Structures are given as structure tokens and as C-alpha cells.
Image (cartoon, rainbow, N blue to C red; front, side):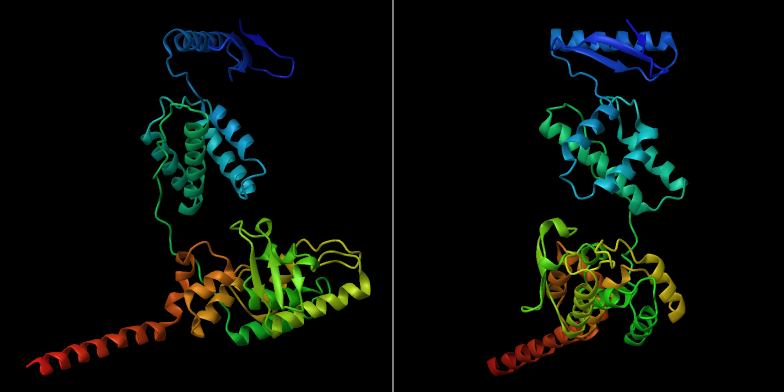
Amino acid sequence: MVYRRKDSPVWWGDFTDASGKRVRRTTGTTDRRDAEALEAKWKLEAHQVKRWGAEPSRTFDELMLKYVKATQGVKRSTRRDATSLKNLHPFFTGRDLLTLKRSDIRAYMDKRRTDGVANATINREISLFSAALNYARRNLDWGVMNHAEGMKLKEPEGRVRSLTVQEADRLVAEAKKSWKSPHLADFIRLALNTGCRKDELLKLEWNRVDLKANLILLGGQDTKAGRRRSVPLNTEARTALLNLARFRATHCPDSPWVFAHKDGSRQAGVVKAFKRALCNAGIEDFRIHDLRHTCASWLVSAGQPLPAVRDLLGHSTVTMTERYAHLSPENVRAAVAVLDSVSRSSHANKIAGC
């Protein structure tokens, strides 16, 4: 029999499932007749599963609840997944996964595009839905189809915006004037010369800095890819770290954080000060993450091979690094030039054979 809880305006169902377990579940409706009809459906399905082994209905809400619980603290994209789920929920809540079709997934994608959402964002949302369905199929033995699999919109090429050396010098000079963010200049110099991400630097602790070996040691928990890597320090990066070490020795010698306030607490962000420095330096259309792009662009332009740049940045595959390949046409020109020698050698062999 359906009932109402004191803390909820909707009706709840109360029935016994196929395994004999008592289940209390919200019907999601304030209409009693609709709630009774839904409860009757659940009871019939439980009977069919128990009597004939039929696949029980599974809702989107059940799926995501189990998936989020199973992956909490395991996936590194928890915050992004929460945002994706918030967008998926209004469209799919209450939907029976057994009756879900590929056209339903397409309808969601079309709606999001109509709302002006970027293709990359939509792809992340559908990817979350697909991952949850695969989890249920493989780990929970749910007999549901994954109609979200392979549903992907074309995304534009990754953004590559980098600074010239002159622009970088102007930016660092303006950053040094920031009294509200005294570490900004050293943050920029480290990002430009190590290729580290913003959080990799702002969450860096001194026990992962080896000034004798000139290395920053990042653990799997510190990187986006979840794999540890060591980042070598050049003269510029080492100088920035020595500046930060002197600040620590003067104001907060017990602080574990490389980027710390005078009281030893971690500096959480530099966005406002960074934007102010950009404005004062006359630099437009540039973001903090573009410091990382600048590091990669400078390396490739100097002739460094893509695999070496990949390892420094911590990309999982060289595919991510290939966005910078166009910055090194001389390498490609040299590779093509090899064909000339191959052609000449083949021609000479033919003459000798004659």
C-alpha cells in the first residue's frame, strides 16, 4: 500500500521484491492513483522475476546511485561527473533502462546542443552515462543495453594559445608588481618551464621537491592521468623554487606547501591576480592553462620530439601532444628529405644493374 512520509510530499511504495526483501521506494508523484499504479507495476515485475526469471526494470536513478557510490573516491573526475549528472538527471530521471532507446540518447544530445552547450561537454555527459551502464552490466549483472556507447559528437581541435618570449617577459614583470599575490611571478615561471598544471603546482608540497637532483616528484594522486612522473627543473624553474624557499624560511618554516601564505596555509588560487597581470601586460585571450601550452609549444618549436614533450606534460598518449606538431615543420621537412636519398639510391641501383 502506498503511503506518505512526513518529510516528503510524494507517495511511497511498499512491496516485497523477487528475493523476498522488503522495499520502500518513492513513486515520485503526489497523485495517489498514479502512485498506486506504479506500485502495482513494481509488484507485478517482482512476481515475474521470481516466477519466470524475467529481467526486472531498472531506472536511471537506481543506476546512477549505485555507480556514484561505487566510484566515489576512486575516480579522479568526481567533481566533473557530479556536474554531468546534474545535467543528465532532469531528462532521464525515472526512465526505465529496459525501454531506453538510442533515439532517447540522441534526443538528449540534440536538446543540449539546442541549449547552446558545447559538444565536448555533451560528450562528457554521455560518456558518464555509458560508463555507468557498462559498470552495471559487468559488475551488477544487469541485463540492460548500453545505447549510449559510441554516441559522440565531433569536437573542435584542442585549443593551442601560447605566449611569445617577449609576452612572457612582460607578464612576469607585471606579476612581480602584484602585492596581493607575491608568488604569482614564480608560479608563472614554474608553469612556463615545467609544463605543470595549475593544481599540480598550487598543491605541491616541499617533500616532493628535490633541489639537489633538480626534480619535482609528482605522485599518482597528484596528476590528472593518475600516474606518477618526475619533472626536471631548468635554471628558471629552480630560481623560482629558491625564491619560494626563502619566503618559507622567513615567514612559515613549518609549512609543507610550496605556495603558502605567511601563516603557512596553502595558497588556493591565483586567477584574479593572473588576470590583472595579463591586462597590465596587454595580453588578451589567454588563460592559466595556456602557460602549459606555451611550455609545450616552445619545446616543439625548439625541435624537441613529441614523445619527450608527452612525457614531460604527463599525457597518457602522444595523441594529445600531436596538437603541437604543426609548430615543428622543419622536423617534417627533414623527414621528407630522406625520401630524396632513397629515390637517388634506387635510381643509381637501376643504372648499375644495366
